Amino acid sequence: MTIDKGVSGARGKTGASSPIEFRLDPSSGVPTYLQLVQQVEHALRLGYLTPGDQLPKVRDVVASLTINPNTVLKAYKELETKGLAAGRPGQGTFIQATLSQVALPELAVLRRTLLGWLASADTTGLDEDGIVALFTSVLRDFYERRRGGHRGGQRETNTGSEGVA
Amino acid sequence: MNVIETNGLGKSYRHIWALHECTLAIPGGHLAALVGPNGAGKSTLMNMAAGLTVPTAGAVTVLGGQPAGSPAALDGIAFVAQDSPVYKNLSAGDMLHLTRNLNRRFEQRYAQDRLAELGIPLKKKAGKLSGGQQAQLALTLALARRPRLLILDEPLAALDPLARQDFLATVMTAMADDGVSVLLSSHALADLERVADYLVVLSGGAVRVDGEVDDLLASHRVLTGPAGTGQHVEHLSVVQAKRAGAQAHLLVRISGPADPVPPGWEAHPVSLEELTLAYLRAPGSTEPPGPPSVQNAEPTEMAR
Image (tube, rainbow over all chains, first blue to last red; front, side, top):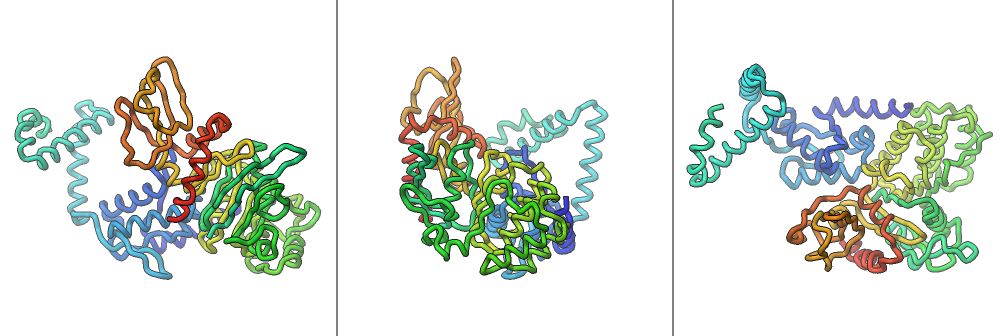
């Protein structure tokens, strides 16, 4: 209990210097370092992190999640290898590149459109699992068709109706 | 630098080997979990590394070749024995005073700040503190000596889940701040999944498997397939086999994630807990190729 003081103090600092805070999903089966990497990538895609932002300090992550510092270092090294972040000696690790291909306002528009679609799916009686299944299948078809020009041509007739949905 | 290195290390008590033919090399910079059932030889190994027990056979060195128990070794190691020993009748402040005067190096300031942060009053008798606070007090005294290797014998056993979390957070922070290496023993692996990046599994006085956690997870998998035929899998080194009428699950050691999956079998990754239990359950005596092959693999892993 008493250690909370130290931890929340650390957390406060994190909030001031880094726009994101990590959390862990113990049941996901994804290795801890990879969860950290994925959360940074996710935040980059959604524009929560932009170049120049600082990632949480290793010490703060370690104290708030109770994980091995080597795990955090491994995650940050992976982000550096991917060219997404860079370490500055004595300061910390900073975001260097971006993954979001779309600016924030456009993201907001897309989000609204998607919400509208979800509402109509909901009114037709589709539940969450059904929506996820439909979305995943359409998404896969969409990219499959785009990737394999010839293969896509064959499938077009099958997937055409789904594509409209 | 290896923080602990043992060679054919053994300790016998009245003709019974508490630890036998133990050969290990634990590299620095890790939190190494020493896992095994009660009586596996964990405390014996730790006591010998700390220089408190003299080996019956073999040798143990610490911190890059210092003989265990030598002045240089004692200076660089902090050891917290089982059940977080504190003098129950001394106040926390007196414990600080005592430890400072018994050690060449002791950072009074760090210890005081740390206890204040934890809300442990200096005037209160150690025996009146909660279990979690007593553990934190013992840990603080150990860390204030600025050790390069911290040895913790079953520090979590008597703590409630919250106190465990707090205790481990202190250890992890010390690792991040000072780069201290840690050897921590436990019979409950669940608490260690996130904190340990090196694993030593001990049972029946012998090392069953050891290595970096990531390497171990990458070099083991579970194969699920037909039980009857041993087809395509007879060449694999099987750690544990579970067979039902039609289906078999084999936990096998492989050379890497790229190892081909035998035809007709399905491969799944293993968790650290699954892997540890498999090695603990595996009848070590009937499977002599197991441990030696593991130890043969060790030098190459160390060399990297």
